Length: 274
Picture 1 (cartoon, rainbow, N blue to C red):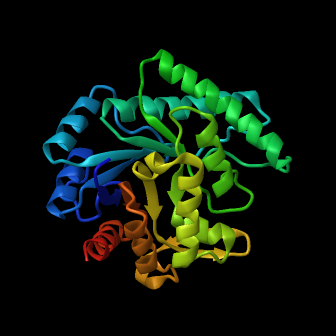
Picture 2 (picture 1 turned 180 degrees about the horizontal axis):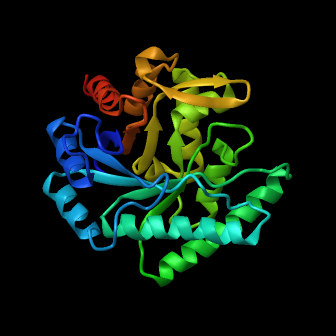
């Protein structure tokens, strides 16, 4: 991508008559330029209405991303849950693609007490099945395992970068709030820079020019993520984070997941433009 775009995780809170089309219009009014389609409970856009979403986004120069449902575990011991998990990602990707979305983020699964390498291989094999079905259906969209917020969840930095290096059309979704909560300490310019350096070293500049990022304040414990906070009410060093974005000349999409989604998206964009 040619620029770094800032937007909201879902329809802005200030949207009158909130729906996806009005949300896109409101993002434009706010002088933001991205919006994430939140399929976190279900895929809530129909095949019939998806072209209208794509048209509205193009009309307003808004980049769309997507977040797949939370009810996904590609390391489940139950075959029915594995099939359902794959289906949720595929269906999210299908509708997001019809909406013209840039990429789709998802939480890949849980370790469930397994050896990490064993869990990694299980999840990788299931992502391969997803990628094959997407190819067979002619759906060309980047799918992104997300950096997750709890040590019990699959998805530390090394895992999602490794998956991205081994599978085509897969790149990481970097959630910096989750990174902070999962590590219970990493929240400085140097640590943000180390993360971006790791991505560049393994995946190259192309990955840094095609980022899908989540940012929020975060409340956490030694067990990881508890809940999201507004940036100014948290210990997130967001100014240092934006400085790292600038210094590494990253491109792509930054999505605010704070409770006040549009306010923090505007805060981040304002710092970036300064």
